[in-house]
Image (cartoon, rainbow, N blue to C red; front, top):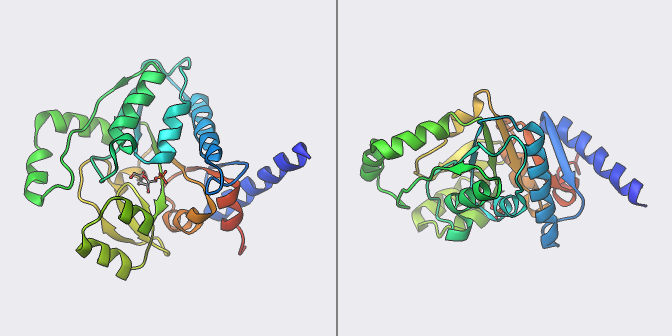
Length: 255
Ligand code: F6P
């Protein structure tokens, strides 16, 4: 029975890779909506993947969220990762401290025996302060590192779940609902067809930056995230997806 399960996951990986036109897909057994340990398994799969592509002196940018927190909790030191530099992908997005990119970045760096640089940006931020902050030399320095990072790992969530979790102001929440946002990643909200319908104002990695020559790894699972995953991948912004069986089965259901 174990072999059959493993080969079932392989079939899901192949079908999903084809459907979302990705370089690589990893599916862990289970559904993280139902069992918390499945998220830990995705975290572990992500660490193993990172170790497999590890080279000296790389910079890794990471986002926040509970899935990224489980990647951090599974991080272990590995040859070739000691001199890695960890940075948060974007400034504050309204997450609680333990799920903020800065916090996760420090934990990952420590566990990998690497280094880190952080972004201190108030959140939310006015247009005026935003313009001033990005000109601050210390912020500018870190922003440069972020935008030229070699590897990006990020979470991906359901639009309304994220908007509520972040205590999004009513006027913005109305836009998100009216424009039928389905998925969210990096502070960008996407419609089912993959169009950006709202964007949180913060510093750091912009969606356009993902197009460069770098490895972009999305880690997201749970059957409730299937629509969010497909909305984000409509134009195809990341090359690798690490997910679970729950989301994968839902994603290939109508193909
Ligand atoms: O807020 C950071 C973030 O990575 C979002 O971009 C994403 O939607 C969310 O966290 C995912 O959170 P979780 O892994 O807890 O579902």
